[in-house]
Image 1 (cartoon, rainbow, N blue to C red):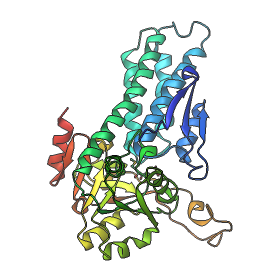
Image 2: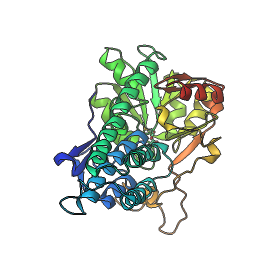
Image 3: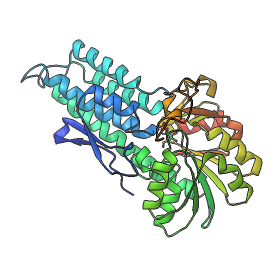
Image 4: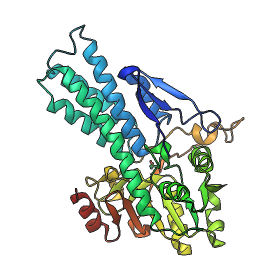
Length: 359
Ligand code: MRU
């Protein structure tokens, strides 16, 4: 289950991504070369999913650091990393980090990159650029290893033949490989197991319809697409034995922010007695947020609800719209949080702190 959705191009002077806005109709790569193009790719969800935007930001940062060095002339690479360079990279860090507010992986990855700049301050820029490139690749490889570990742990929670439900897209496109919540399904499929997966279409941007059903179908997993408001009837029939979702930020108490509609799914699952599993690497945990109330929720353009994907507007032009991109699921509704370091169960204050302490 390879998915090289982020990679360097032309020796590191550009970064390319799979354009997620073009799927499922076209499989195309976008090549990005400027800070504006990189930020815009994140904002308009050409690259999306918490781990993937962290990886992409790290690759963009390494690529743009190279440009900054080259802009000082032919010997730019040999010049020492001085305060001016560190300042320029700090501005770039903030510029990219502000592109989306909810997924903590974005800021986490950029903080790691900025740490490398600071460590190499005073040294030749060439060494710093090599270290930045290595750090970006390390972030991607660590994510692949985390996804694989989570897929194994998640697979241990389910049985062959089960019905599963997922919301939004937390597959290979949203990460580096396997994904988070799709990992157990994809790994199980590789091992000859079969699951029946219900994919919520995920209004308004249809990540479930456009990306999850595409990824599962391509991998040979039995998938049925449903509208978000059909989850209750599906669960009422006894067709679902477990819910699996990804996550954009976990608070210290186990509250989880994920794609809008996730908390509704968790409430329905609780009603029907279906376990609700959240899967994320530890880079998604933010101990700086005591509870979900501290997590910033991104609000997006109303036209995503009113006009996007429709041939004609589907609401009066001036009607007021509220379009939060994420919601917070209360920890009391979460059966377990699966990380690469193990499965956290309530009480989450303790299990999450233990997972983070283990290194
Ligand atoms: O707005 P998006 O498409 O970036 O939202 C993505 C999600 O909500 C995913 O579930 C989450 O980032 C986890 S991806 C492994």
